[in-house]
Image 1 (spheres, rainbow, N blue to C red):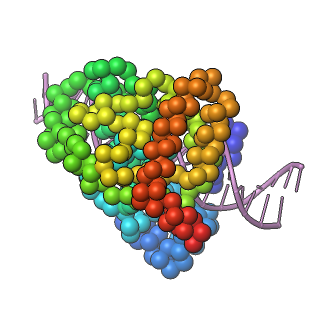
Image 2: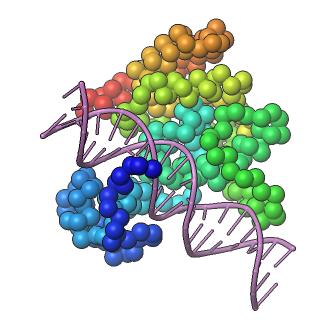
Image 3: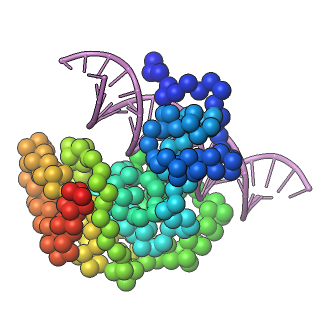
Length: 269
DNA sequence: AAGGCACACAACCGCCAGAGA
DNA sequence: CTCTCTGGCGGTTGTGTGCCT
């Protein structure tokens, strides 16, 4: 309300993209590279909003996009990262090569949030769920689908599957430490944030059993995290203990794998 | 066979932050 | 310092598809 739209929508197409539009966009970006989304549609001969072009490219047309089902490894990693970062889909996507934030967000909303909800309601209510938990359905159709997912191994992975998870460096994404802090703080402060997922406990950083597979962040974020919690949390003593554990565990992982060195290198590059 | 329902996912929208004038 | 532009993010919506009754 009151805000000017990102572009004049008069005379612009909306809705699903045609193959012709896709081709125009791909050709243009291959010739001129990404960026300048605002002027791109005009130059490429597209009657689309620049934002729409950007989204289409990033979420669908990019050559390094990995199509197909989320693997159990990715599934597990998404759960872990979400338990730690909350709905920071771009950060999570940064650790899953070929996956987009949109894809992960959709996957979470349609699969994982419901599964975790189901598991958590069996025990206790978990408060580390994402914003939209989705509607739980009790239809035979959905049950059937869930059974299929289970048989496909999506939710039956255990430590063995988790042990195969690879470590990926995060993209150099700018993150406000305080915002991350808020998320983690909300998770830590909201009772046990662990979510029982089958035989396995998914917690903030319970990764010691999987060979040090990790998550993306940087020292600045963690410094901010520690400072904020130290200074402002009403339950700071309890939070401190939990946080110290997590932070120590995280540092252990970094030392073990030399993640931070290469991550810093990637940032400096 | 038809209608209803739920799901999956592409696409849109509003807001925010950083850069530059 | 302020304003504008631009890119990026997360939440939400729209639509096609498949299953069930």
